[in-house]
Length: 178
Image (cartoon, rainbow, N blue to C red):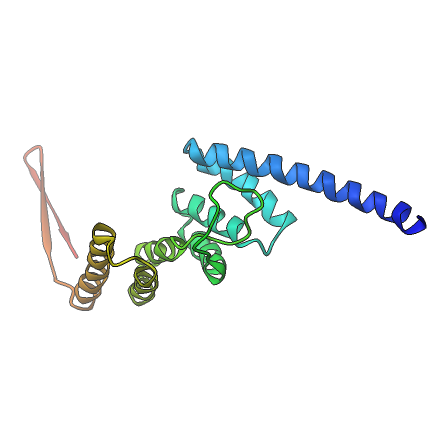
């Protein structure tokens, strides 16, 4: 009986914590689904303070960052953390979910790709592709094209072309060299 009395405040605090967590998660999901990624990011930030090891929160935070200009580096950090605990049985929209969906590898690859880290992007695209069903033809083809795009970008960056660009404006020619 004494032990139960001592545990009641802890149970109440946990219940309050869960209510706050659930409300913040619901609000974050609402803003994210509405395309208001900056607002959603604020809620995910608060949730990560409450539960910093939650891979689902890192995934959702990283996904938001991908949709906000100049947040790609931050997206990479969070998506990398969430890529360690992916689960095929991921429950979309559940505030109790702690794992990340398999698509996190694709999003991480996309982040690397945007960041010109092509070898890392290819590696993440391959990891994502390994989890695809062979009958997902369109998805497999899309990922293959992303990999080819990385390979092409690497070859172009390794062999730059000197160019002279002439811009014609109102009778005046302006030259730019690269």
